[in-house]
Length: 414
Image (cartoon, rainbow, N blue to C red; front, side):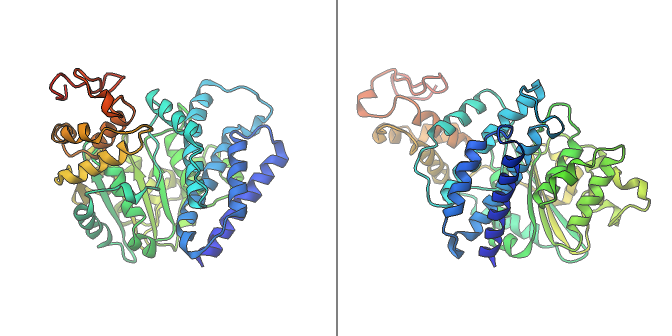
């Protein structure tokens, strides 16, 4: 069955791209990248071994294509320039296209390392301060030290998601502690994949267009992930459009046991409150009230799970309740932090002087303080620095050309 689903999703992507090219080939952003992915997918050998990974990849790819079609501003397709909000969204979409393209090539076994330029673009975009963007995908081989906490999280998440109840869990903790990674592990776990369909990932830290109604974007994103027709979504733009979108989400999810992740939540208000409860209501008492709550778009009849990640404890509490919070702790196993660091260091393009790096192990681990992102960032810095061969191990050695980490005469971190 999984193979048939992948074949359907490939055909959907190919047909949608062909339709867009026939309408206006020069208007769609990133057409060359989409054509590359189409060519690889059309000749890819789909089997039970790669079907699950390809399926998740294709859900994101079709969502991305729909987003790019919206980016062209369909009501005025002849326009050749971008406003400032358009340009802002274009930059973030460029970063997303590069990430999805790499993942497609990995899934079909044609990752030849030719995406160096794309990786550099991603790094430049991040350095420029663009909004953080996340997806449901992760490389499990680079995840270390979360096993025990993941078991506790799964126990909390899956205990009350039977029929008639929508369960919720909030993953909270300081920045860089691994909240998104936990959500990704939960999202892609065998238990989640066997229990929930559909599974939807919503990144809440980014806004497609400055000044846009974030509530509408959340609902539109859910509908796109569900495969709702783009034209139908865009047609909901009247005075009652928010209510129409909530009703559309409710109808698409009704009768399904679904999983939705709201990742990196920052700003919430009453509209986001108690998404799993809604006072026990599965729908509003009055037709005019559909637009009042996100919770009204999330039916409870078949059960399901809502996962929220946030640095802000109050934001997660508002959405899923105080009793449903899981506080992520720093990694207590120093070897897990070291594994994350060495994974990042392995991306160095030169020969690493392992003796020098190993001699600094305890200082590096002390700097990371059990934070996975700190370990990865430190490894990235070392990988791009001058500590690549024994010839560079002189005194007052510069570890980071950007000035992030410097060693003194004794090799200590400053």
